[in-house]
Length: 413
Ligand code: AMP
Image (cartoon, rainbow, N blue to C red):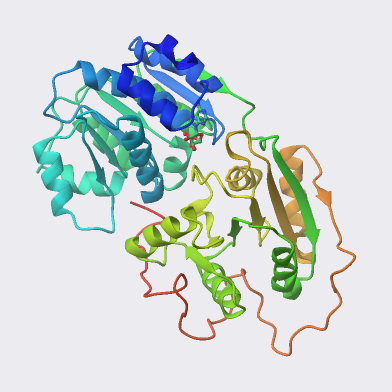
């Protein structure tokens, strides 16, 4: 098997095979030997390239060679969902070994996490806010030898830089550090220069461009007909797994409720939902219990659900970076995927800006069998713009639930 050249222990090779990885991806080809050799590494790779296994495989190998009993590896991720994803990848790749990991994320009780940190586990997967809260004077990681910052550009966008600096200041200086990011804006490059030592750079694929396996179409449509167009398109999809992005939490909630009222099996993911609701929503979408997930940008980056067939931008994204991240949720690992953008007349200038940034014009499609000219409803409240009040309290298994205001930015901790 092509993974054999990395000299991975037999149980790990078995796990790689069980996960269906037949050959290393380009980032794995490049990064695994470098990490294995002990280098600090900066990895710039588009999402869906296999970067999680690229850092976890050599890290697991290292952990198996070291004495156990105290926390050796820390992975920092920007959102709970991404931390959970790294955790599940670790469990898959380290299955059958004695290695243990702990998930340290917000929205769930602190004490089991604090106990795990005190006892020491081989690998800690954390979001910065919760980890900082637990580390402050109560726990430490004196034997940590490897630090990984995943999705660094999103951590920066979410304002985690001060938290990251505080955490890094508490870690042993002698360590191996890796930073992975979908893009490399100057702020992230500065962070990398500050906390990595003579890093080797690994870049896979062009930065900031959508992946080639995704078909991209723009649907010009009056804003009050967006929901009808969505229903029209959903009717034509066979066994779809659809991720719909709205600009606002309120928009996501309202659209999910509307679709639910119309008989669709839909769930929602945004920062007005509790941690338990977010976990259930994602689990249900992953398990295909819900073929439709309506989300805000909280789900735009790094989220790895292999079977997503369609990404629908119900609102035009504000910038090309946001667009590229969103549509990277489909067309994963070489599969084909469809991206759709619903563009109302008042959003055309926003899309024009995105297209200028992408340096390409996206194809437009007008459907001959859809009634674009149907009269607007008597009291029109556009979905997805953040305007108006929800009609009623949530219903349906996947939709709604108690609200929670995040203390700081969307999807934090
Ligand atoms: P990531 O970029 O880490 O989010 O990974 C994207 C997806 O690719 C995940 O579903 C991985 O399980 C999958 N993957 C990672 N490495 C390989 C590989 N060598 N062959 C096939 N799939 C892979």
